[in-house]
Length: 322
Image (cartoon, rainbow, N blue to C red; front, side, top):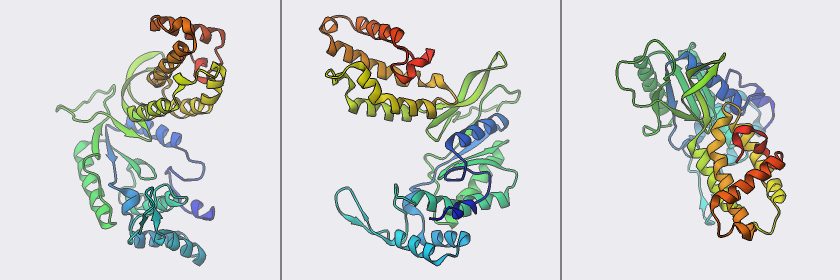
């Protein structure tokens, strides 16, 4: 897929755009949550599996008329997909393989026509963030947000997509503000790009206030904990601690760089699980800690942290030490 096809998709949007990243989308969403009181958290039901191939080809034709590009895209959509059990799945005119090489790009081109251009034409003043199929729309008032959600549902239905009613919700951005709804609000948090936006205490110009900011989501913490569980760090007694640190260094650096940009303290819960694993490693590695209390092994790990504060990537931050 040539690079000029990316450049023809213009707008203030994110996700597979030139010089745009997930952090840009999160940062813009954070700003808009402070400006607007209500958020429409959209979820599309089976997005990659339900994209209509005929409409997708029309969306690609809107951006390029190169015959060889259209031919390759058509072949890609019509090609059968081999599942994990070895069976072949035929697309039957809809869907693009999730995890495929160009599937995210094709999906982004499709959503550019279905949602971006449409909402920009109908509601030019609406603020929203879209990263692939993750969409967040901001609004001042709840009644208008409800009407907009109904129109979005109709628009998606016209384009043979369906809004997931169970996961789509209108969220109240509770923060320090004079006017608050007089009724009880059902939803006060939402997830966007593996981050949870919810009311949190923040420090602004030396004053503690209630803000509405992102931090790593619980789903992401659970997923990383499962990954740490599969690695079996506590059983690597044949390796020194420096070897384990070098094995985990790229992962830890990636977690800090992505999840710690907006709220580094949100990673405390994640690294607490890692420290438990390392404490188990100390007990299994050294006999003198085997039959003694856990706190002694933890103190030994804390002593190593004081002597070698740069051994693990996250030990450089005071709030993330064991």
